[in-house]
Length: 266
Image 1 (cartoon, rainbow, N blue to C red):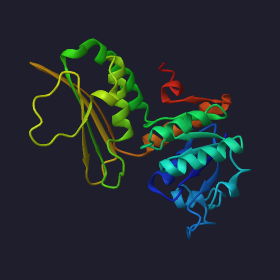
Image 2: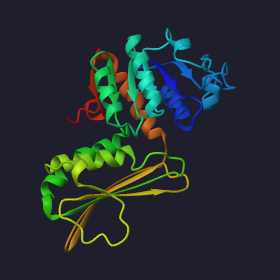
Image 3: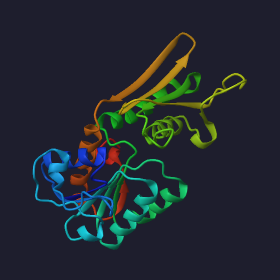
Image 4: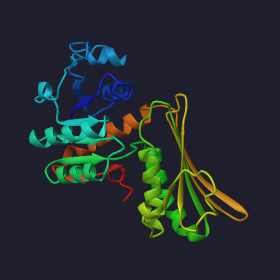
């Protein structure tokens, strides 16, 4: 599988290039940067610190359309929509780690998956996806007797809140308990809000420093607490998951998948 990385000059983009170059079964086919970037023409491998790869940075997907089979997209919701349309039009597969999509953008993503293979996950870490699976069991076992809070911490540059991973953690727990997260979620608390309701799922967000990503789901009742925590110390954990997903998509022509499918956790 020939992989293209868009947003190649960013922190995540450079890590993705490094992960592709280190992985077996995939090759770096293209690296795309902003069309006005001064880096256009530079070697993608040298930019990522993995040595010359013979892949020059380009300023658009159109310029790379003959050089890749699957696109890795960790960009912004608006740009991801454009990239989805490009992949559908040119029969390319796509792995999406973009977070912060609204309902309309998510619906567009699902529609595109009827025409090409789409792997979409708010967090591609293997460890986080194991946590998703574990949380189903924990939530079903503990039931409604436990208060549930989702606490997440990320670096100061993250623009969406709560994180996509935090929301997915909440969705997993809500689904296991037969709740609708849109109805029971409480985002932050301030002032005289009264006592906690039995079935709400709370979210607390911290933005500070260079934290890659910490997530905890807290189950608490009188006399005990259970905490499921995942801490990421490097973006490489997300990059390796995304590259693994690229290889997994090799046998898929259409459909919407996530990391639970890639890891056979269904």
